[in-house]
Image (tube, rainbow, N blue to C red):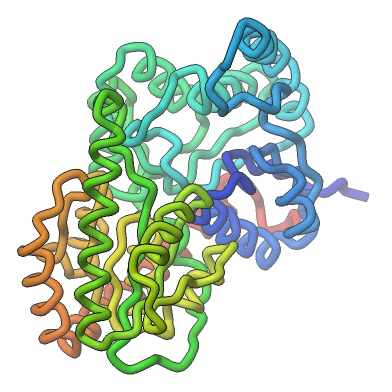
Length: 395
């Protein structure tokens, strides 16, 4: 009797980022449909949540539970350092038990938000090195990437990518970024973000309603010295925009893309206190998509909030924090409706929103057609993965 193929999934999953979990859910759906006999296990940041939500065997990404908290003294610094050593052996042992490990999307090769090289980039490097050491294939699937301006981070991310067996990117700039960091991308493909493979759930639409996706945005790696200023400016302008919608008699529903964003929702709710304002209760990307389906138009910051809106063919305005937002919007036909979260031009935002609504019928048709094409391309990628790593005979 043939033993089942062993597939590992790896990443910051179950840690509060709904986009990461949505990418994971897309791959999980593919595996359970096309390879139902496979033995699945997950090495992730939130093992208890992933185990209870998806019924899978899980292993913690890090030995030290406080890995992603700022060290507060000598003991925590020592624990972090010791944990780095322990994680080498833990990662090798887990990877050895797999036939293939899939990193399902996410911005695992990005450094657009504050990032330390010895955080997740180090964990990803351990994964790729372990795969090479024990002969397990590691596939980075539809991942995001950017060129880091920090030498150590750039080196760690670059080697993590080089040592992987398979790489595909969620947009062309991500592949260009890895090429710029010295990775040979000649055989690497570009496919859409994995969340386009999720089902488009729907609810009845509330007339004139607007969905506003907010983010606890503090700038990027190079903005640490003025992170508080950037955050306050962003929240102030988003609050003013929502206030204008409410003054116009529009129902507004607030969305998050990460648990950290709840603080922004709370601030806006306290400031405005209106019966027209509500916060969507969501814990998964599926729930975000279902709740977002009930609004007519969307203005959002988090990449996967924007993606959900486009998947639903909603007229969408992106207030983005990285180039990936603009690339996604342009791909789906809405490139003219973008703003920078770091420097929101409020008057332009109001004008863009007015134009977005005035062209809603035309734009909805364009986005619906292009969104369907994204899902079709992901079907191609899943078929390529099955052919390369998971032969259809092994089911």
